[in-house]
Length: 126
Ligand SMILES: Cc1cc2nc3c(=O)[nH]c(=O)nc-3n(C[C@H](O)[C@H](O)[C@H](O)COP(=O)(O)O)c2cc1C
Image 1 (cartoon, helix red, strand yellow):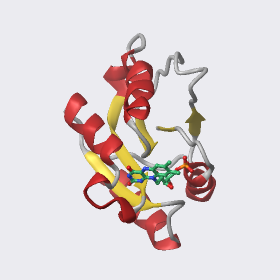
Image 2 (cartoon, rainbow, N blue to C red):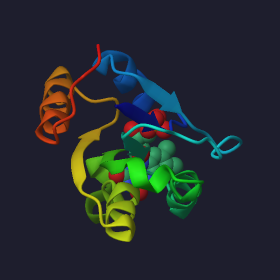
Image 3 (spheres, rainbow, N blue to C red):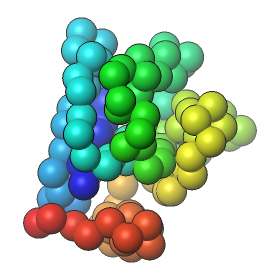
């Protein structure tokens, strides 16, 4: 089980460090990475480019067959645009939005995230 993520200003990267699970960082220059195990994608929220770059990764080779769902990181200051990239991706690929959190998340978010991921029968490898 892999956590795939994108992080432009470091919030999601910070969250990843604290959940302590196997992870793969993608960015604008390297979205074409093939994965061979099930994964969840943690998506920061900015503009439609984010949806596009994550889509390029998911559509690469057989990656979509391993996709479990999405998690969004955003800010509630954006009101109805809160975590819209993760929500759009969830609709586009018909996979669940497992969880959302603000910025790099609280300690409670870390625990909730692990609980949500476990519901999908995913065991943390670490
Ligand atoms: C320019 C800019 C635009 C943003 N737009 C949104 C938005 O539309 N919706 C939202 O929920 N968060 C928005 N955010 C908040 C970020 O998604 C949030 O800080 C996230 O944790 C960033 O993750 P990262 O540091 O890993 O890139 C925006 C932040 C910036 C700087």
